[in-house]
Image (cartoon, rainbow, N blue to C red):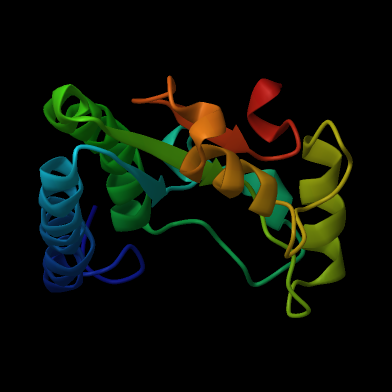
Length: 161
C-alpha cells in the first residue's frame, strides 16, 4: 500500500500506539488487579472486521468504504490477544473474552448501505443499540464462568454465510 488513499505510515503508527499499546496497558492494569483478587472478567470489544476482509458490494452507491487497514489489523490482533490474556490470567481466576459486533446502524447510514448490509445478514438487519447488551451481561456474569478465550460474533449471522 502506498501513502494517500490507504493512509500514511505515520497514521498507521499512531493508530498502533493508541489501539494496540493502549489495549495492552489497560488490560495489564485491570488484569493485574483482578488476578490479585482471584477473579474477574475482561471483555474486549472487537469487530467482525477482525475475522473477515472488507465486503466492497455493501458500500456500492455510497461514499463509504472499509479501506482502513489499521482497523482490520487491530481487531484481528485483539482476538488473538484475547486468547493470550485468557491463558495468562486464567490460572489466577480471570477470564478474558472478545465480543465482535457486526454493523451497528446509525442515523447517518445511507439507505443503500443499510439495504446491502442487511441482505448480508441472516437476520436481515443491522444491529441496534440494545443488541450487544445480552452478550456483554453474559460474559461479565457468573453465567459464563467457564467461558474464556472466546471470540463471540454478535452480527446477525453476517459471518455465518
